[in-house]
Amino acid sequence: MCAAMSTTLQRVQSTIAAVTERRSVRRFLSTPVSEETIRAILQAAVRTASGTNIQPWSVHVVTGDSRDRLSRAVLHAAEAGEVCREYDYLPERLKEPYLSRRRKLGYALYALYGVDRSDMAARKAAMLRNFTFFGAPVGLFFTMERDMALGAWLDCGMFMQNVMIVARAYGLETCPQQAWCDFGAVVHRELAIPDTHIVLCGMALGHADHSAIENTLVSERIGVEDFATWHR
Image 1 (cartoon, helix red, strand yellow):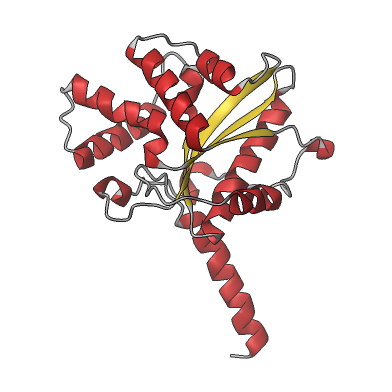
Image 2: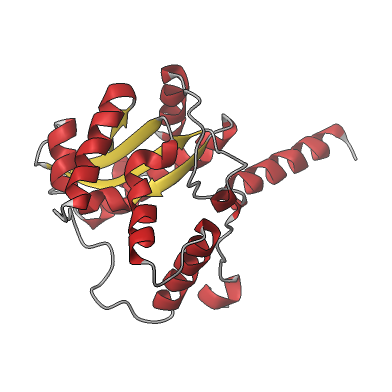
């Protein structure tokens, strides 16, 4: 194989691996991530496509004392049941096949945690780990102006995906966490996010703890034949 073909193959394989080997990591090491690295990830991700180049995303980077203060505030609100959703992520009644997919993932994760489905206290404790960023030293919050239309949501989603993929080039992993949006009022207050912006999602960023059993979870994905329609 010539050098050019070998280089091309390596690029193809590394690009595919960056996507297919991405996981939602649910336990991180406390190893710090430098501000320089975070900036480099965000700067690379900014090449995301957006409609007519509007680039509607904003990012709030949370580390150190700010991270800890936010975690305490949201944990307090969660324990008190003070839910204040930014938006509805799912319909009130989720239909098939989406309901089964969601349940299967949840049951698999609880099994790895050693939590019985009927143990509601343990299930709640597992859920609350979201609000410690699963131990990650960095939290990212993605926002955009609230009066933007649906196209901007697409743009921001693609930007977030790029952040997750680029992070892997630096040996880091992520977990997108929409759960923070259930306590949007607290996030707004603690991070001084104006009401003119909507909090779209949080994200944990850091070094994965590869010894953690929950990080062995690999969610199933449907095949191309299940979602693609060919028009020839």
